[in-house]
Length: 327
Image (cartoon, rainbow, N blue to C red):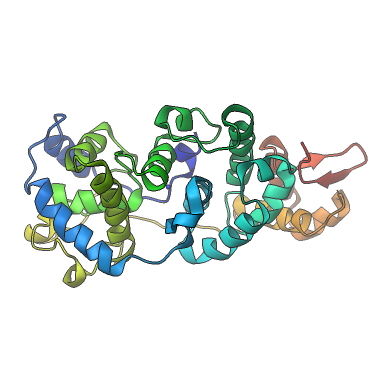
């Protein structure tokens, strides 16, 4: 959902050592021995996708490569339902990379609203500037050139190349990794961080044909988002339940550390969010005294504000005022 990808990938569960061992065993070679031939997975998943894929704006032809890139930045750690309104407003305001590049980075942060992880907005702005300066304002189709853009990691580069340009790349987000963990390796959850073994497995499962490979990337991602979910998986609706190694082995339970959701209340993230909300809502610089009212604990509040400044999300002025960055 990954530069930006590493710290900002969608949440993934803590994984047991057994899961990592299973991935290494199933994908020890570039062409691992799989319990089910890949073609027996491709057909059912692609047919299911044709019937059940959501009509999302970044999947429409008119979205173009820029629309796909914007969606990939926004969807990292953020549900589709929250992304949709911000995405549409963003593309209406900045329909091309050059439009965003011409605006101040603080305006990107302002428009990001409450999507969370606002450094993504700065990185998307930096990518737009690079696209304008290096690529004539067009999102490059070359995977290597995509990787060279600010804020673009392996996941995002592969996703844009695949979804926007129909290229053959293994696109590994949390949803895809979970589908592959269950269907191919028989474990409930993938390792915490993407492993080399997972990448080998993903390449082994990738259809040879470019067009089919691009559809497979989208289809396996959608299957993980809608059916093979982290909780309450719906095996009755799954097109490959009959081939799923995890289901066929009796759905063994996760045997690693307990999976805990991320807390928010009372954290520095919450304080940062409140400070940014005040700054986003003001077109003028905001006084320190105003920011002091958003959180009672002064040490935590100061730490959060210092962190925003260090991250380039907030710009301090000499007179004790703060604003979103203008350059």
